[in-house]
Image (cartoon, rainbow, N blue to C red; front, side):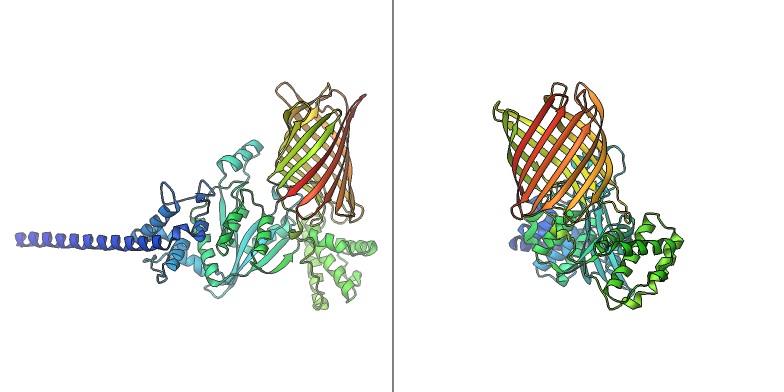
Length: 609
């Protein structure tokens, strides 16, 4: 009996072995057949395959992206994806977008490359519907250095498995978890910071931007086919499984959002520039005919500023008094367009003053309740602000400039480049106030007389936020810069020094076209031999004139700024916009200290792209 049993077990084992061999050969045959078919269809060469892999010119956009193949290539990655789907279906659950695209290209039945259920992914589909996709732009926050470029993300809308209408924000970002500015710059530009990719309820995201940070939300409903929406949602899942590192300049919220949108427009892959900003993505979505409709969800600050432009001072004072005291009934609002404007101002001012802690939460809630009771009076009225100070009006953010300069008896050629920035001399009609954000702003001078090349300035980071102050909205101006620049020394020669400076002040808008500002700056300048701590109060003005011309004037009086005597500086600039991308720029700069002086006159041609 034992003998027979042993022989039977041996035969059974052998039989099982044959089945395994046959199954493996069949699987290998299926794999090879799919690979041959994929090669014949040139899937690895298609733009959409490259978009899904986050490639440009056949190479990864982000060096920390997760790939299955090593060494990497689009073809090898395609083979490894098919192999993983057939041999380890659970591991392949991380790549639904790749599998969906391969099945579509090979005309395979849906689910062919998903032989086993992917429970986590299916839960994601159940609770994150994609009946509609919306591009969301949170406008720049001129009060915050980290938010001056805005934020871009997608929103997925629909009805989930529980028959509940839901909205989810799809956002990619990093956290500035250190006070060491040099370390933050190094990590975000060189090694990459930890990338955080979130799919979360949209309402708290919107509330944070609108109320906490007082930023506008621009929402652009997108025109997409069901297949495009499905592939984008699958790609969102894939990014969440293996989130790459965050690089400030080459892989940020704008990069990720454009790669997701490029799924619907794969021919636009080349538009994924080395430097992308949120505004670039808004402009791209219009150029690619992706936008179906647009609306703005205004912050209380923005809406208050907009409504103040159409309100007489005595009514502003009355509304402010009513909000402060809670005597809403005393406003006696008329039921017409003027009354509706005043009603909207009261609501915005109530929210703004609560966020600024000018009124208590109890007063805010009481005012809110009383104003809500008036809603029915104005159900037939509406204010359309969708085209008011639109982000689409912003100039392009990269610049190349060439010019000539005359300093005393010397002439020079000037070259300037920055990959992404907003200059203080630009037209800022699309926002409230004047701002500046310069990143890697490089200025080089070729001394014609001496045939020498000089670095005049390298701004690693420079921010100026001049928010108009009013008694209603408040507003503090600020500035920060870190970099290298040329200054005059005791011999009144120029030399290159490192500079870190902070500034604070007030700005006033006299009219829509004229503004004044005053600020106090303090900083540290140093070279290899010495360092100095300096202070410099400044006053200035700007004027928007005819023929698309803007004038800026500034006067500063510096103490201890790398020269042993007070230094008075005047500068005047005139910028004329020639067309959408080109401008002429003239500047005159004069520095005085005792009997010494230095005058610099220059003319530039600027091109934005």
